[in-house]
Length: 567
Image 1 (cartoon, rainbow, N blue to C red):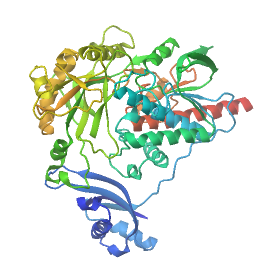
Image 2: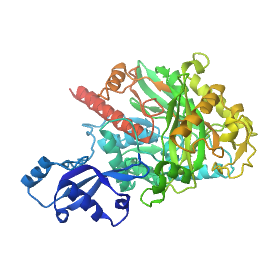
Image 3: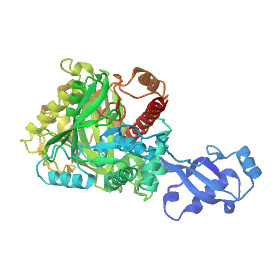
Image 4: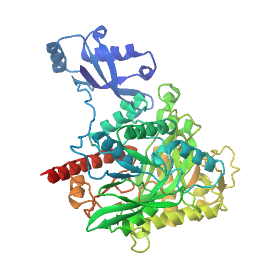
């Protein structure tokens, strides 16, 4: 098959039954008869909206043209009309991990069922390693019920919520599968998700997403596949301690949180994919003697606008075209004092969600369903935290800052798990909002908001930085700093504030653009830090990739140890 890329297409090409538009564009670009184009398959499509009066698609397609290999070579030699390009299509070969050459003496343990843990466990199971998977939260169906009860005003379940449970924090998000990493496993992750029931569109969307409503079934199917291949998944099972003997992991203590019963389980190898909110697990890691260090993270608020405003700002007059869908954005500035402020986890047509996982603290996040058809758009507006913002020298000082912000938000609203909120115009004027703003954006936070002055909730450096950034963002996206946009606080869980240090050679390899090396912890105990909570990922895609990579390394280690034992 041939592949044409960078093909310019009108927006109507994105509507159903419009393949002839695509065939005509390919034929015109290549100088061939459009009637000869067969087996047309979309590989990638993005929106080019740099000029608001000329919004169009840019796409790549694989196709057959009913000609000989010599004629295909001639088409490639002649090339396309710029900027399109043509070449031979290389089909996806599929992903299959190396097999375990002999049964391991002990089954490896995976802690956490976020994307890193799920993909690590899936890889180990496919290899024949029969992993034991430990998840402190509930299975996804029970977890949905816990979240719904809390949203409706019920009590917080500290073990099953937006942060904890099957699928991890990413389950209640937009299900974004975008990333800045260039690891070839990204394609594997997309195909594994699709095989587990994610929409086929994720294989060709430039900015793929699954949406919370579909992601819950996808993670369930991944878990079922793990079990089908010999793995075991224990929910409501929290890792409380790791026991090291003679420099090697010997066992772990796991507590059944439903029954309050603890068990000591023998364990020689463990993949630690605990997630960015497992603060008690960070303490257990420190107590086990693993090396940890502070890492950069960010905190801030969620901002909501009418989705229609974002669509118009991004697409102009074309915003109503049915092939476009809800628009997104990504903004970043460096302020004069050197501090960075940026938007994160933008959720088109989404809602702000109740993301607390500790009693006495309020924090928020964003979520979209696959259709992205809600009335509001929301995104985090985050401020970078540097070393001078943290108190003392404790490696968990970043966690302490997060907690102070969450408790301040809780106390500001009268201890009800409502969220403190303020209109942007009032925030910039240092004026307390009263919720009576005519035409103001209606907040989507399920437990309701308490109108206040966010300057009284946020650390001063965060409030000052957001104040400075909002007008700058407005210059790049008209209406961003509209006086009736609403900000809801606080957003503290965008990433982990710590890193569980891997072997130095692995860190050097990662800095050298992803070269492979063992991702075992620096203490060489048989513990493999993995994913976002361990400080090695930032989102679903990069966490899943890290899960594949770490599992592959552990499979290689198990095979090496097995070969040494047999010899």
